[in-house]
Amino acid sequence: QTHAYTTDVPHNVTSHIFKDFAIPTGAVDLTLSFDWMCKGEDRYDAFKVWWVPVTFTPQAGVPITAVNSGGISLGRATYSNAAVFSTEAITIDGQQYAGQTMRLIFEWTQDRYSGANPPAAIDNLTLATTFCATPTAPIIQNVSDQGFQVQWEEVAGVGSYDLFLSEMETPAP
Image (tube, rainbow, N blue to C red; front, side, top):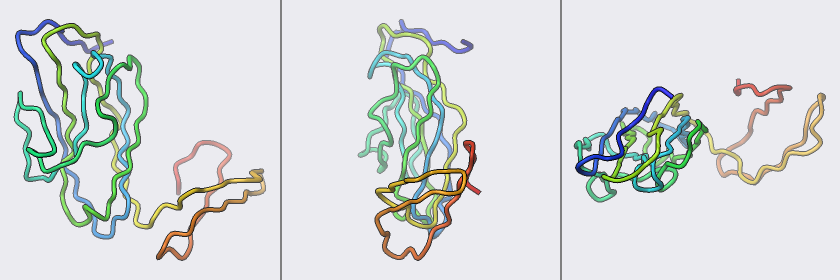
């Protein structure tokens, strides 16, 4: 473990790191993915993920709210209680933000009392854009080295999809 935090501090601590993303026109869905760990202390020493207008800049020591930022909280209410890395994937409605620049903020908050190392760590951050709606309620059957059968709920405005079969975990082409 190469990172740690002091759990006995004289006052509550709130800090932020952020990155801006230009959302392309025509975006339908966005998928935010990152690896994270944070043992912390339940909701007292934890991090949150925020999606806010680029006009909002977080201030050190000031917790973010939907009201003060004009944004939304993404994913879990808080991220903590995990001493090893795991991957989080969050779907965002891209149509709502298409053509805008948005700010992604990771917010660390800790109280003055107990907690457990490690604190928050985030790695392998990606934001993927989908330009057509994702099929819903997929049912995959009869998978073999020759092919597979798949059914899903029809999505309005989508005429066709390309399907890809791989023998190993492979990113989509």
